[in-house]
Image 1 (cartoon, rainbow, N blue to C red):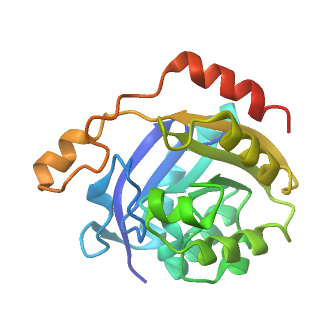
Image 2: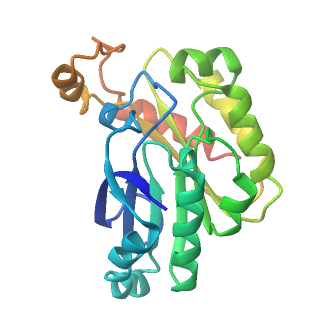
Length: 235
């Protein structure tokens, strides 16, 4: 079995608890207006690797995992688009006593029950609070997101919620109040992160000759984020 990965961050600190071995999977069906990794979109590119080869790379960092309560995080792109490869990799991680997390927008091609069976933590990126806004922000299938959430809610897996805050699009207090209501429908929420929109990936669009849809939108104001964080933490 062969998977496609974009890159690996061997000592990640922002993608789950502790020190993480972060695998960025190649391929994504969404086209988020603020995406800073357009080079992960096409599943036709990327490095080919087997689950065994990949877990062997992760095992090298087990001492860091144990000392920090860390582990492996499957990110992307979108890891759910390679379900068979993902399942086999997660199985091997669990066999080797490694904590597993998936960083996902919840839009894959099925096998969610099997994937979550070997997952200790889900970092769920909620793109928007309703179908119309979701289409505008992510250009993807809101129904598929709901299917993943339905399966997720049947588990007792720890959950971190993430949401990108974009000026004039997702930065109103009413929007954050609605997001808070949605989050209240989940069990096992251990952390909520409001991620401020930034422009660090703009140069990639220029290099790849892709129009950047948020041209002229300034990075999210840090003081306003603090105000919104107080609202969202009332869950």
